[in-house]
Length: 206
Image 1: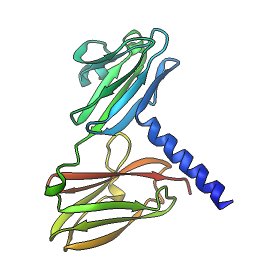
Image 2: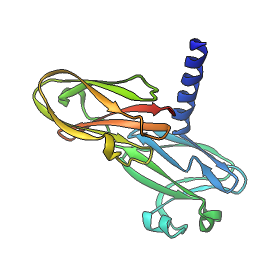
Image 3: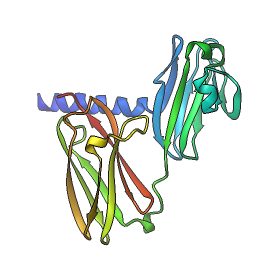
Protein backbone atom coordinates (compact mmCIF):
# COMPACT_ATOMS: atom_id res chain seq x y z
CA UNK A 1 0.00 0.00 0.00
CA UNK A 2 2.80 2.43 0.95
CA UNK A 3 4.59 1.64 -2.30
CA UNK A 4 1.43 2.37 -4.29
CA UNK A 5 0.98 5.72 -2.53
CA UNK A 6 4.60 6.67 -3.18
CA UNK A 7 4.23 5.80 -6.87
CA UNK A 8 1.07 7.90 -7.13
CA UNK A 9 2.71 10.86 -5.37
CA UNK A 10 5.81 10.59 -7.57
CA UNK A 11 3.67 10.48 -10.70
CA UNK A 12 1.65 13.49 -9.57
CA UNK A 13 4.83 15.45 -8.72
CA UNK A 14 6.36 14.64 -12.10
CA UNK A 15 3.24 15.67 -13.97
CA UNK A 16 3.13 19.03 -12.21
CA UNK A 17 6.77 19.78 -13.03
CA UNK A 18 6.22 18.85 -16.68
CA UNK A 19 3.16 21.12 -16.78
CA UNK A 20 5.38 24.07 -15.89
CA UNK A 21 7.36 23.74 -19.13
CA UNK A 22 4.62 22.87 -21.63
CA UNK A 23 1.81 25.16 -22.73
CA UNK A 24 -1.05 24.05 -24.99
CA UNK A 25 -4.15 25.72 -26.40
CA UNK A 26 -7.37 24.38 -24.89
CA UNK A 27 -10.56 25.96 -26.17
CA UNK A 28 -9.98 29.71 -26.05
CA UNK A 29 -7.27 29.66 -23.39
CA UNK A 30 -3.68 28.62 -22.77
CA UNK A 31 -3.11 25.73 -20.39
CA UNK A 32 -1.43 26.49 -18.08
CA UNK A 33 -1.67 30.25 -18.55
CA UNK A 34 1.21 30.99 -16.16
CA UNK A 35 4.46 29.04 -15.92
CA UNK A 36 7.71 29.56 -13.98
CA UNK A 37 11.07 28.27 -15.20
CA UNK A 38 14.77 28.87 -14.54
CA UNK A 39 16.89 31.08 -16.77
CA UNK A 40 18.20 29.10 -19.75
CA UNK A 41 15.25 26.67 -19.79
CA UNK A 42 12.62 26.35 -22.53
CA UNK A 43 8.84 26.31 -22.79
CA UNK A 44 7.22 24.08 -25.39
CA UNK A 45 4.14 25.67 -26.98
CA UNK A 46 1.56 23.54 -28.79
CA UNK A 47 -0.99 25.52 -30.81
CA UNK A 48 -4.10 24.13 -32.53
CA UNK A 49 -6.66 25.51 -34.97
CA UNK A 50 -6.23 29.22 -35.61
CA UNK A 51 -4.57 29.82 -32.24
CA UNK A 52 -1.05 31.27 -32.27
CA UNK A 53 1.36 32.89 -29.81
CA UNK A 54 2.81 36.41 -29.93
CA UNK A 55 4.98 38.06 -27.30
CA UNK A 56 3.79 41.53 -26.29
CA UNK A 57 4.70 44.23 -23.77
CA UNK A 58 3.15 44.32 -20.30
CA UNK A 59 1.05 47.35 -21.25
CA UNK A 60 -0.28 45.62 -24.39
CA UNK A 61 -0.95 42.49 -22.34
CA UNK A 62 -2.95 44.42 -19.72
CA UNK A 63 -5.00 46.09 -22.47
CA UNK A 64 -5.71 42.78 -24.25
CA UNK A 65 -3.87 44.14 -27.28
CA UNK A 66 -1.93 42.29 -29.98
CA UNK A 67 0.95 44.59 -30.99
CA UNK A 68 4.20 42.62 -31.01
CA UNK A 69 7.17 43.84 -28.98
CA UNK A 70 9.54 42.07 -31.38
CA UNK A 71 9.82 38.97 -29.21
CA UNK A 72 8.95 35.32 -29.76
CA UNK A 73 6.10 34.03 -31.92
CA UNK A 74 4.58 30.60 -32.51
CA UNK A 75 2.44 29.96 -35.60
CA UNK A 76 -0.89 28.13 -35.53
CA UNK A 77 -0.94 24.31 -35.57
CA UNK A 78 2.67 24.17 -34.40
CA UNK A 79 4.77 22.57 -31.67
CA UNK A 80 7.72 24.86 -30.89
CA UNK A 81 10.14 25.28 -27.99
CA UNK A 82 11.15 28.80 -26.94
CA UNK A 83 14.34 29.18 -24.88
CA UNK A 84 14.45 31.99 -22.31
CA UNK A 85 18.01 33.20 -21.84
CA UNK A 86 17.20 36.23 -19.67
CA UNK A 87 15.25 36.48 -16.42
CA UNK A 88 12.02 38.41 -15.99
CA UNK A 89 8.32 38.11 -16.83
CA UNK A 90 7.39 37.53 -20.48
CA UNK A 91 3.87 38.28 -21.71
CA UNK A 92 2.14 36.68 -24.68
CA UNK A 93 -1.29 36.57 -26.32
CA UNK A 94 -3.21 34.70 -29.00
CA UNK A 95 -3.73 37.48 -31.58
CA UNK A 96 -7.18 36.33 -32.82
CA UNK A 97 -8.50 36.00 -29.27
CA UNK A 98 -6.54 38.50 -27.16
CA UNK A 99 -9.61 40.70 -26.76
CA UNK A 100 -11.30 37.76 -25.07
CA UNK A 101 -8.43 37.31 -22.61
CA UNK A 102 -6.54 34.45 -24.28
CA UNK A 103 -3.08 35.24 -22.95
CA UNK A 104 -0.38 34.00 -20.59
CA UNK A 105 2.93 34.71 -18.87
CA UNK A 106 6.30 33.03 -18.46
CA UNK A 107 8.21 33.96 -15.30
CA UNK A 108 11.94 33.24 -15.66
CA UNK A 109 13.92 33.01 -12.43
CA UNK A 110 17.48 34.39 -12.52
CA UNK A 111 20.44 32.08 -13.14
CA UNK A 112 21.88 30.36 -10.10
CA UNK A 113 25.29 32.02 -10.43
CA UNK A 114 28.81 30.60 -10.60
CA UNK A 115 29.46 27.67 -8.28
CA UNK A 116 32.88 28.95 -7.12
CA UNK A 117 31.34 32.25 -5.98
CA UNK A 118 28.75 30.63 -3.77
CA UNK A 119 28.93 30.90 -0.01
CA UNK A 120 25.76 28.80 0.29
CA UNK A 121 25.70 25.33 -1.30
CA UNK A 122 24.25 21.79 -1.06
CA UNK A 123 20.64 22.98 -0.90
CA UNK A 124 18.06 20.24 -0.30
CA UNK A 125 14.40 20.08 0.81
CA UNK A 126 12.78 17.00 2.33
CA UNK A 127 10.33 15.37 2.34
CA UNK A 128 9.45 16.43 -1.16
CA UNK A 129 6.48 16.27 -1.83
CA UNK A 130 5.35 17.30 1.69
CA UNK A 131 1.98 17.79 3.38
CA UNK A 132 3.20 19.51 6.54
CA UNK A 133 6.62 20.68 7.63
CA UNK A 134 9.58 20.44 5.25
CA UNK A 135 13.26 20.49 6.24
CA UNK A 136 15.56 22.85 4.36
CA UNK A 137 19.25 21.92 4.57
CA UNK A 138 22.24 23.84 3.22
CA UNK A 139 25.93 24.52 3.88
CA UNK A 140 27.59 27.91 4.38
CA UNK A 141 31.34 28.32 3.83
CA UNK A 142 31.60 31.38 6.10
CA UNK A 143 29.52 33.66 8.32
CA UNK A 144 26.83 35.27 6.19
CA UNK A 145 23.26 36.50 5.97
CA UNK A 146 20.91 34.24 4.04
CA UNK A 147 17.48 35.14 2.70
CA UNK A 148 15.08 32.19 2.41
CA UNK A 149 11.91 32.67 0.37
CA UNK A 150 9.04 30.47 -0.75
CA UNK A 151 7.73 31.54 -4.17
CA UNK A 152 4.58 30.47 -5.96
CA UNK A 153 4.52 29.63 -9.67
CA UNK A 154 4.25 33.29 -10.72
CA UNK A 155 7.25 34.28 -8.59
CA UNK A 156 5.32 35.90 -5.72
CA UNK A 157 6.93 35.52 -2.29
CA UNK A 158 4.91 33.80 0.44
CA UNK A 159 5.73 36.15 3.33
CA UNK A 160 4.48 33.82 6.09
CA UNK A 161 7.20 31.23 5.30
CA UNK A 162 10.03 33.55 4.20
CA UNK A 163 12.77 34.97 6.43
CA UNK A 164 16.29 36.43 6.59
CA UNK A 165 18.90 35.23 9.13
CA UNK A 166 22.63 35.20 9.87
CA UNK A 167 24.41 31.82 9.82
CA UNK A 168 27.84 30.66 10.99
CA UNK A 169 29.98 28.40 8.74
CA UNK A 170 28.76 24.81 8.57
CA UNK A 171 25.72 22.69 7.76
CA UNK A 172 22.31 24.04 8.71
CA UNK A 173 18.79 22.66 8.96
CA UNK A 174 15.74 24.93 8.94
CA UNK A 175 12.11 23.92 9.40
CA UNK A 176 9.64 25.27 6.83
CA UNK A 177 6.00 25.22 7.94
CA UNK A 178 4.04 24.57 4.74
CA UNK A 179 0.89 23.24 6.41
CA UNK A 180 -1.09 26.42 5.62
CA UNK A 181 -0.10 26.55 1.95
CA UNK A 182 -2.58 25.41 -0.73
CA UNK A 183 -1.63 22.27 -2.63
CA UNK A 184 0.64 22.97 -5.57
CA UNK A 185 4.13 23.63 -6.84
CA UNK A 186 6.38 26.14 -5.06
CA UNK A 187 10.03 27.23 -5.24
CA UNK A 188 12.39 27.43 -2.26
CA UNK A 189 14.85 30.24 -2.99
CA UNK A 190 18.04 31.04 -1.06
CA UNK A 191 19.79 34.34 -1.78
CA UNK A 192 23.23 35.35 -0.52
CA UNK A 193 25.28 38.23 -1.91
CA UNK A 194 23.01 38.43 -4.95
CA UNK A 195 23.46 34.76 -5.88
CA UNK A 196 20.29 32.69 -5.98
CA UNK A 197 19.79 28.97 -5.53
CA UNK A 198 16.35 27.51 -6.27
CA UNK A 199 14.77 24.17 -5.40
CA UNK A 200 11.31 22.96 -6.45
CA UNK A 201 8.91 21.93 -3.65
CA UNK A 202 5.51 20.29 -4.06
CA UNK A 203 2.96 20.70 -1.25
CA UNK A 204 0.20 18.12 -0.89
CA UNK A 205 -3.21 18.79 0.67
CA UNK A 206 -3.47 17.97 4.38
